[in-house]
Length: 176
Image: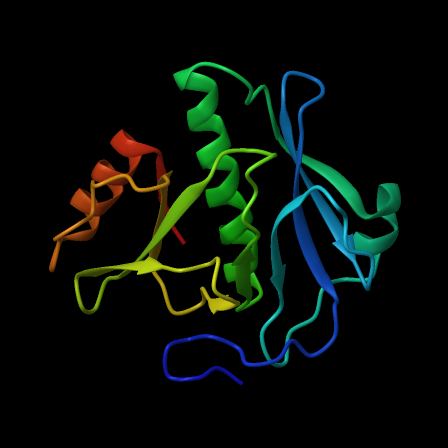
């Protein structure tokens, strides 16, 4: 059950998908589906929303692990892949009407800001994923940009195409 600001007060069991940063293989982001194991190198997590569940094979196939994106270490172009990996991770959560949280990770990965977009309101919302689980099913598009990036500061209303374009220029963005 979500509160007015979209946050979930308590997680109903630890079943979900973790986003893991691994510096090996030129840097990569991995998905890890788990029913209780919390990986120490996790940078994010999503759990399904009410009435939704993750297919059982996701937890068993390859030990619950799969590569999301690789070649993300070093350079601006590879950093964009990192932001794109975050966007893909959030899109997966949206498919399950899920809730997402980001773990502050000074030692791993790159700190990011996540901005959600609602088409009906033509409005962008900065999502504080560090504070707790945020429902992503209510958003129509998403942008992931470097932490403290000013791209969306002061933007009150914006059309979706401009939101996506600005998000792509600053990091990565996509419709959900």
